[in-house]
Length: 427
Ligand code: ATP
Ligand code: MG
Image (cartoon, rainbow, N blue to C red):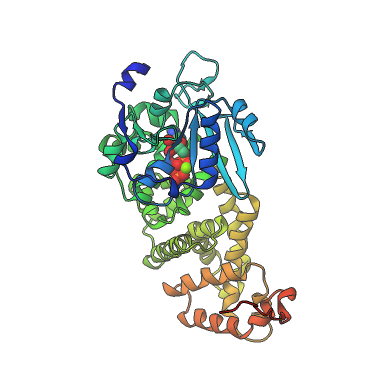
């Protein structure tokens, strides 16, 4: 491990007039935290994705702050805060719906009781505090290790991150053969950032994924769930899916799908996944709601569909076949990625509702329309109809049917016409 002086020798300071980060693009809450820490005599910097995205001209989705104040000191400065995490203790400061994450600079001390690793080198806990130089080199990628110092608005670069951002590449800090085993989730992060930012993964970091991918099998399933959702709700799920296959990591996320893909998959079903991910990306990128339940319904559908059709070729009895095969498939899945129950149930309901869309006579359509998951199941069905897994006309039929029955679907409270308020100063 390099010492502080050696790291500091590489420091490149980019003063405020030589970079494009403006305080106007930083949220008021993040600025408030930075200034209060700074006024209390602490060092405070914006770090991570916030700095990276601002340099790239992208609006960051959240702001992370690093400081030399301990979690307890931060906690005392902000009433609206709480200490979270065990592996890494952090402070969350809440401003309405906005949460600002504050981390204390971390050092690296192999002998310390506060840094715990297992035999494979995986970090189980790391609460050794340190200086900014040490904090910089324990981050994952150089592009994620830039600091925007609120004291003089300069950007601090200890690891050549600025050059990598300019070259649009993801370079792991340090030796990939150490850094991936320390935390195998970094491999998934590499694919997510590569997809989202359109960066290439630098050769050494890319090659090492093939050597260490298998370590993802030991990540706790709850953490895997968070990462899978970040991957598929990144707004670049189509590219994420390609990269997961290219790097052989899909089998640690959705093993049943990976096996299905090895086994001469049908074109229509491949198109279905692609189309569903295109749909998810466009929803994320236009701010429409998305659900983990829908993602898992999509990713496991090829397997569920195949097995259900095998045990029950008769379409009339398809619902019970889907329920029957869905259960063990989901059971196997949650051993790898622990999907909260409401989402796994949603996926199973989306599947078993599919055959009902064939029934367009009598009272059945209205009953289906009032199902709480109608919208999600309908979207799923329309994607199937786009790739000819369902008759094309069904999507049109149900789209029209919904329009005709819009009033019936509105919640009770919204049905009454509201009295219009006159605007006094209209015009
Ligand atoms: P985004 O928030 O856009 O998804 P981000 O880079 O900010 O991307 P976060 O998960 O918010 O990612 O983490 C903030 C920063 O913490 C990262 O930029 C990185 O410097 C550091 N970091 C996060 N996870 C890891 C990890 N597993 N190993 C090393 N450093 C990490
Ligand atoms: Mg972030």
